[in-house]
Length: 363
Image (cartoon, rainbow, N blue to C red; front, side, top):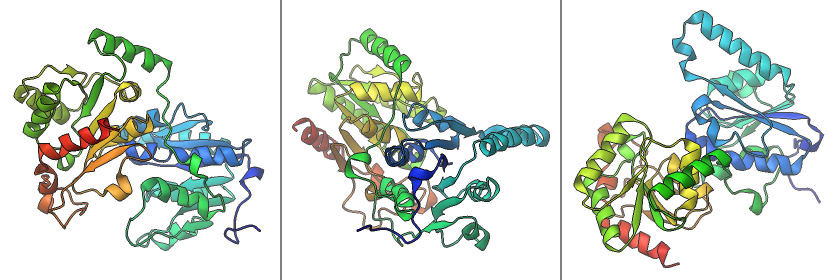
C-alpha cells in the first residue's frame, strides 16, 4: 500500500529540478540531504542549486548536484543596467534548463517569482502565513509549518520532499560537504608546518558573523589555557572578517598558551578539511559548527539565543553547552533587548565547556 499525499509527484519521471536556498552558509549546507534524496529516488534526474555566490562552496562538489547557479549580492550596487544584464543572464540560463520541479526553501521572493516564470510543472515551498496570496499561488504544493520550530532545520527542509510524496530514508539525512583535493592538500601542508597531525588537535572557532552569538574573549582564552594545560593542541580559526579577527586578537592577547592560528587564512573548503582532521570541534552556533558536523567531527556547541533543537549539530556526536538559568532562551533575539549581547551565552562558565569537552573525548 502506498502512503503519501494524494497529489504526490513521481519524481522518477522528471528530467530536471531546481532547489533554491538564498540564505547564509549554514542554511545552504543544511539543504545538502535534499539533493541526496532526490538523486537516490530518481537517478536520471538532474538537480541544480540556486544560492548566493558566497555560499556556493557549501554545495559545488556535491555528487548529486548537476549545476550550481549563483546570485551575487553586489549586483544591486553595480548600477541598473549592469544589474539587469546579470539578472537576465541568470534567468536565461535557468530557463534554458527546462525545470519541471522547483523546490524553494526560504521566504525569499525570488523563489516565488522563478516558480511562476520558469514554467515548472511542479513547485513546492513552505506555507508562510505572512506571505501574500500571490506567494501561495506561485506553488503547486505548500508545506505546512509547525507553529513552533521543535524540529531540526534539516528535517524542515526535507518536509518539502515529503510534501510531494518523497519520503527520506534514515541513511540519506546526513550532511554532505566535499572539500576537494586542492583544499585537502593545502590543509595537510598548513598542519604539517605547525607540527599538527590528524586527530592530534582541537579545532576552536569562537566567532560568528553575528556578534550576539559570540562568547566573550576572556572566557574563550581561559578555555584555551585550560585545554593546553591538559596537553591539548589548539587550532584557532576565524572568517576574514574584521570583527572576527578582532575577537581572535583579544583571545590571543589573554591566552598564555601557544596556539596554531589559521584565522582569516582559510577558504570554506579548507576550513572543512581542517575540521575533518581535528579530534574535536568547539564553537558557537555558526556555519563552521555545521561544517564540522558535516565532516563527522565531534562537536561542542555553545548556544545562546538560538535554539539547538532547530540548529544544533546534526547527526554527529556532540554536546550542547547552554544556560539552564535563562528560561527566556531560545528567544532568537539580536542580543538581550536587541543590544547585541546575549547574557545566556556570555555568562556560560568555562567549566561547563570543559566538562562537555571531557565528556566527548572520553567516548
